[in-house]
Image (tube, rainbow, N blue to C red; front, side):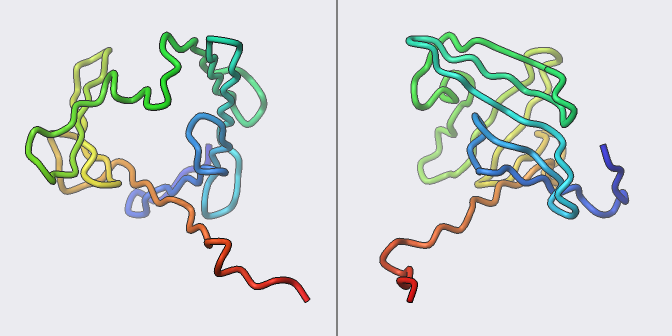
Length: 131
C-alpha cells in the first residue's frame, strides 16, 4: 500500500459506495487496494475480500442475510435523536463509535478513524436530456 504523510489522512474511495460489493482505492491517485464481492447463493451470502493482486485476504459466510445485517453487532444510542452507534472488536474488546458518518475510537473522540461520504446522486428529474 502507498504510504501517506502522518498529517494527511489517507482517503479511500468505495466504488460503488456499497460496502458489500465494491473496489476500495486511494482517492488521491486511484490506486486499487482491495476488492469486496458478495455472492448470494439461494439462502446464503458469501463475502470475499481480495487484494489488488487478486489474492483472497478474507472470506466469510453470513449466518443471516437480512437487509440490515449490522443490527446484530451495532448498538444504537438509547438517547432519542442522538446519531451515534457503538461496537467493539471481538478480538481485543476495543470500543468504537460512529457519530453521524464519522468513526472514532471510544478513547479518542477528537481524531476520526474514518468518515463516510456517500456519492452525490442526481435525481432523474434534474438530468437534462441529451440533444
